[in-house]
Image 1 (cartoon, rainbow, N blue to C red):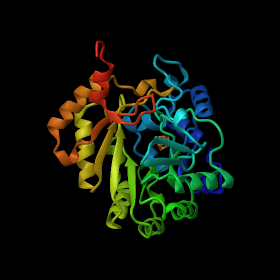
Image 2: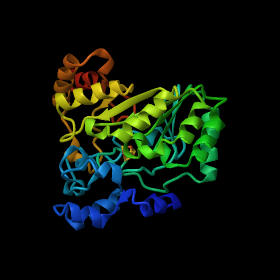
Image 3: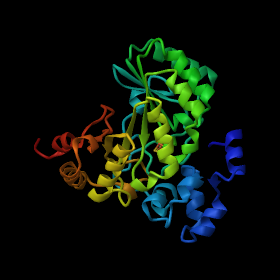
Length: 330
Ligand code: SF4
């Protein structure tokens, strides 16, 4: 994945940490684990992110570095954890609701988060021109009011390709959301040129993905501020992750620091049970207890909704409702 000319330029510029450098720095990672995990789901380490890693098992290391737990089957593993396969009228489209449509812009990312629920996708990294045209034609006649650009990371493609997509649907879809982790994992991607292009195509909302306050480095805060200063609404989605943010102190610090950065903490996602991410999963009852403590700790503006995207493909619901549905005798 991600072997285009931009990738080569990034490696030449030293913006990505390679295998040898990472294994020299963290000798506890076994080379065969790296090789096998990388073959299943690529390992890609942005240097800015890696500067925050002190140990492979700290909150930053766990999200980025491969571990042996990825290689073992675990109870509850699902290949389609949020039920997208049955809701995909075209290969790069997901449609769970009448008023919304989701386009997978690419499968490439600046960093491949080891818990990702789309970690088991196969096939090409990007739609070819014909597949993209077919997807855009579907979107234009879909009747949806919101288009969600997802992936992979929609900001892993060029500004020109992104502008092409936005321009192709602008007259048909009133609101566009870009779901991206790039402002967090590759803040240099948020250039003045990108922001200007998005501002010219308002209303475009940007939904970022930050899980731990240590991700909010100075360069990340600059990238987020650049978007907000341009009048682009910015919201955050976090995922509740074992060993990363599965305690109220970390989540409260994250949410309060996001609000200080003028980013609304929109969702806290229950971890989806993708094959290979077992080490990150938190139980439903434990998650609800952490969320209950968070709701009593932070103000309303800093409190995300705790949601789950169930495997039946019906779309996100509050975890409290999911727990009620799942209890015996209901
Ligand atoms: S950036 Fe998003 S899509 Fe890409 S690996 Fe991370 S969680 Fe998955």
